[in-house]
Length: 114
Image (tube, rainbow, N blue to C red; front, side, top):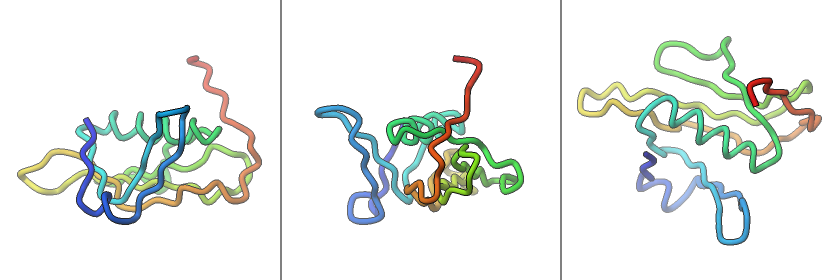
């Protein structure tokens, strides 16, 4: 389940067109019910751009999950998802992101599970 925060409706939103009449968005404050939902949404967002992403284990820890482009060359794409610390919410939210693949070689990570 994805919930758009008020900030998503006004600014900080990036939308990528999937096909005629369909698009996928990413924005600061976007709330996702589980870590799996966050991972799948970020993965779909990158796939529409023709790229794949990985969880950066060096930057991930505690309540933070940081996803980066899987390109062999240095790429600026990054999505930072945090787990809510509120006792009233047990969800995840996008705290920051860079949606562009600047410097990306275009080489995709080969997922052998597919």
